[in-house]
Length: 116
Length: 114
Image 1 (tube, each protein chain N blue to C red):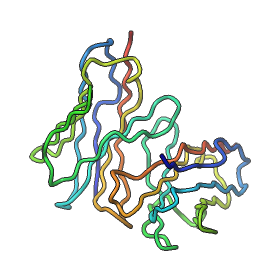
Image 2 (cartoon, rainbow over the protein chains, first blue to last red):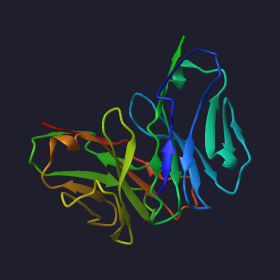
Image 3 (cartoon, rainbow over the protein chains, first blue to last red):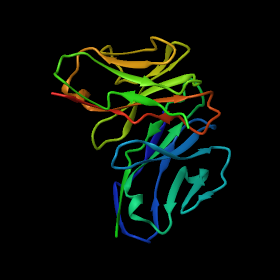
Image 4 (cartoon, one colour):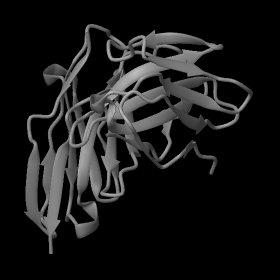
């Protein structure tokens, strides 16, 4: 069975601080996919990134970066120079397949508050 | 950019009533999903649907729930006899052949059962 753990529940930072959101996953599959979603106060789920298990390269997109470490089953997300608009709930998710059985298993989410 | 749409955005119903939540997936997508999120909690998988049948369902998806693709565009979730604990945000999602980055989520329907 697949499982995603986001041990941090709430994080509060001051604008311009860097913040890292942790994600640890469990799966028995050798091929799997990891995701991060953002849920702003308006409630929709905004896709941020997908990572394939066979691609351990870290990724940077503007102020966002992701650190995928298979050895520790972690897929952490860092926001550099945080802004108030980054305030949201962030979910890490895992899928063990692509296609018909590709359900996403979500973590409990981390509520990030960025204060001016 | 094409998007998944859901109606209604909000629904209030009395316990025991039937509700139908509607979704229009992206037109060339093949895989369809329903998820729910109880207020303040994580997003939970309910059911996946492919080739006009259920591919997988979770423990939550009991006999009170059903899904249907009545025509070429809509994908519906029916709750036969709502309970208080069915109050949640329900998200529809769709995916093409998995070649795209992710499942595309709709904006959600907030269901309140009184």
